[in-house]
Amino acid sequence: MLKDKLNLVPHLPGSYQMRDKEGKVIYVGKAKDLYKRVNSYFKGTVTGKTRKMVSEVADFTYIVTNSETEAFITEINLIKEYTPKYNILLKDDKSYPYIEYISKPYPKLKVSRYLNIKRKDNKTIFGPFPNAYAARRIVKLINRIYPLKKCEGMPKNVCLYYHIGECLGYCNKKVDQEKLQQMEEEILSFLRGNDKILKDKLLEKINNYSAALNYEMAKELTEELNYINIILDKQKVELHDFVNRDIIGYYIDNGHIGINILFIRNNKLIGSHNELLTIKIDPDEEINYYIMNFYTRHEIPKEIIVANSINTNLLADLISSNWLIPEKGVKRKLLDMANMNAKIYLQNEITRVIKEESRTIEANEELRKILNMPTLKRIDAFDNSNLFGTFSVSGMVVFIEGKPYKKEYRKYKISLEKNDDYNTMKEVIYRRYFRALLDKTEMPDLIIVDGGINQINACLDTLNSLNIKIKVVGLKKNDKHRTNELIDGDTFSIIPLDKDSKVFHYLTRIQDEVHRFTINYHKTLRSKGSISSILDNIDGIGNTRKKELIKKYGNINNIKNAPFEELTKIIPEKVAKELKDFLISRDTANNKAGEVK
Image 1 (cartoon, rainbow, N blue to C red):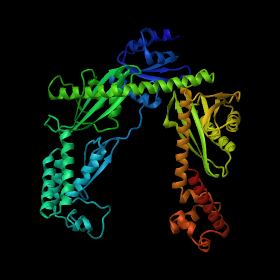
Image 2 (tube, rainbow, N blue to C red):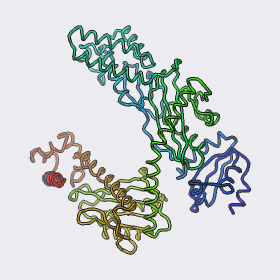
Image 3 (cartoon, one colour):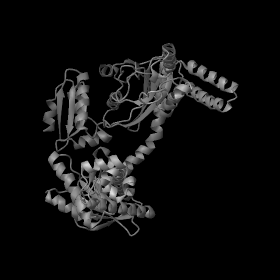
Image 4 (cartoon, helix red, strand yellow):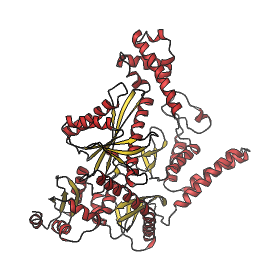
């Protein structure tokens, strides 16, 4: 069937989707010639992960487009839609900090992070600064040297900053416009690359403090000047056009790609970004994916320098920048430097990555064999937590092919108000998989519960009531509260675990992760909950009474120490007594927990 379908694929550009036996998309690709590309997987020689992917392909589909650029856009959209396991995952990533200068209604500097940089009215953005500490220190220093607005809001009267000459008195609206304009020009000039302005200002202040015998302040500013000199000297490059540019280098070895991106802003190398990619299908495609995804999260500079193997024609249609492939000169040297950094980074990381892949993939495979399962891709692991019957919660973590998949982690606030592991487990399993049935989301191959036969039975009873068949195992602890055995939920037989085995370390990692995740949620409820969620535990305190208590007392300690008669003016005596008793028992429980710790 596949052979006949392969012969019908057209010699046209487009995007293709590989599907497994369940019809799920496991890989999305694009091609200038669909026929040649798709047939190459089944008629050519494939190795490594490509072979593994092809072994899982039961069918494929494709979408014909008018051009390779349209195929690339279609491919990206489909990857976002299906998140296939053999494509690069589009993960959320914290962007680098920028220094933001706000001119109106008053001049102000701050460090900001933007996922998509947009030039907003009255704002000028400089960066990115991979060194967040340096960005904050520069902003602090400029605020110290120049009379920018430093307070929040608009006070009625001038504050201390005005009286010590560190503010122009923006709140009295009688600002010297000449001073304001000169200050703005100097700050923007420095941020655009003119180091001399800030250095001269610092030297002037150092000399003034020295003349006034204030050696302590002079020493402090001298240290700031030395720091600025070190940072700026490290950043200088042999380009004098003040064009914002990125240089993208890479190195390929042993099935991996090391990426290094150098950031040059205003004639300064302000830092770099490294990434390690695993080659799943085609190296050129992996690099194109990565560049495209990178610039959906970061500022696009005026110029991007790349090697001649990068498909700049394709990327230029999608990323508006001047794409340059240098053959010689300073820019070529910078590209060579980026390539060298990529090589060093890859060589440093490759040993760790290979070891990690071996540890997780092999351990997952060993676990599959121990449990005699045909496949083991996804694991859902559960843990319950409560403090002497209060704030009962459960957490679920997900491991896919041996690795944590945090996007699928879930928290559950349990409705039970007593310590009941059996019914807590029943509730969380029911909520998790009843919802999965409704939404038709992916089911796991294996469920791990942190407990013995009691928790396994609770899980199995609930799954049976939902008519769901999933393998269940429990992790049993010894008398020293250390996991040493695995209980098979099908036979209730005990499987001893060798403490030196990969499976033991793998299961311990899963157990530690779900325990950490659940405990953190529990702590969040207890601390944050402090006033609001604690009051939620008391019958007779609804939203109205809760708001009144919060408004009058502000925190739990004030409520606990309030006279009983005073509380009864807001809530009934019976409710007030229950609240007082609850707070006393809570303190007792917390003290006991502290002693145990």
